[in-house]
Image 1 (cartoon, rainbow, N blue to C red):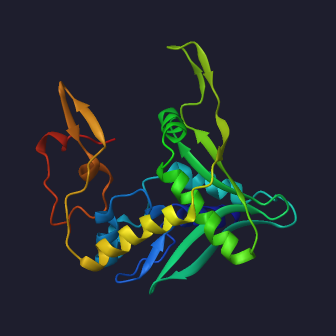
Image 2 (image 1 turned 90 degrees about the vertical axis):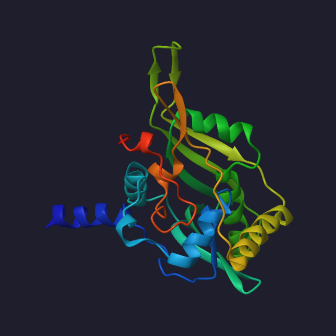
Length: 242
């Protein structure tokens, strides 16, 4: 019985648990930093059924493990917050919020290059996401919060090429972004979705195939490629399976 219950938890943790319906006037924290075309397709089609299981299964399982940890009194885990804005709703599910120390923690699992981009880009998607969580929490509780990323590095360990040790776990403090900037970015998403005109995404995911650099976000990472009017499949990426 225990193994069956655990299997159910694993399947649940790797499945999409948010609002999957179409035509929902809801902006989630994770939308900030993504292409506005993604937000429009999400609004028009909801969550595509065959993609309900996320690709970030390792991260989902880390979340599952941490959800079993008792962090003590007044530490809340995986609570969804929302607030109205225009005739929409801003939402976000906070991984951990420590009411004793006024700290919001977001858990991420990725590779070493992600840490570098977070540190270098003051408007990195993860920074924007955490600041939306902060804004939601401050609206809910009427007090200020600090923020941090709890970052699990899939490439952690000794790097023989550089001769250095890469930490498996890092805590990365996140600076506050002015709320006006956050609202401007939310307005950009809402205005684009309400206009309803699809556009080509900025494809920043590049893989080198032989001697050729090929954009691969559509082919590898987009759940909406089969319904997107801008999708232009590239035959040279059809053999990629990672």
